[in-house]
Image (tube, rainbow, N blue to C red):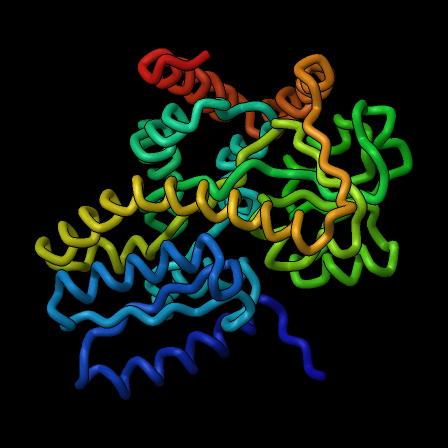
Length: 347
């Protein structure tokens, strides 16, 4: 099978997608939205509700087509297609976007976000650090950062019990291809092993890796629980994703269309927070039913504190990687989180 480098693959897909767009132009304006997950996922629910609202608000003058995971290539391909204008919208995790703007990897620093969901919602929806500071950096790369939202707490699924960093000795933990995630799991004592999402089940089954980390809904959807023995809540991270569009596309919209888009994204904030919470609760029950002998462990506050202390190494690595700009972003974001916690009555 012929393999294309990412840039060539994206160019080929861009040409194909562009041809389809031209053929449909006479019917309606079409916006294409690619997600990083499968049909029925949290991202899919977001994209489908986005589709419904946009088509309703434009009386069908704009149609939205949703492309699930794998349809148009890798996560890197999707962001390239957005900058080229072949795709109008895509989900992109901070881990992947870190190759474009290093500072976005601040969301891979363990124990950064609050354990108060209302505080997280305020920060992820309204943060000046995210939408002004980081947003400007993304526009320089041809991307407009529309929103960020969580998909649930990251949970470890492993082939052995993990309660302290020493338990990660000689343990291959699958991570995304993200320098910060790799550093985080090194700090925890594991051997981080980057691997494409679609290969994780096979990697666990063949013992190429000893564990992986994802929100509950993804663990259930991809059946990772079938090939691991433990689910472990360490409280180290919320899985977050972004929705990006092309800067040229966004700036080229009419004032009316741009206002409609901004309002739609704002409306979806409360919706997706509720959806991801419901999804993760429902999927956990499915896992329990499908595999009653799955061992589920929530680390104690004392056990979490040990990992949080170890995570300081990852924090320092982030500052080392990103310099003064990254340090300011980290400090400013932490200040926003503390203010949001205070407003929400949290920690």
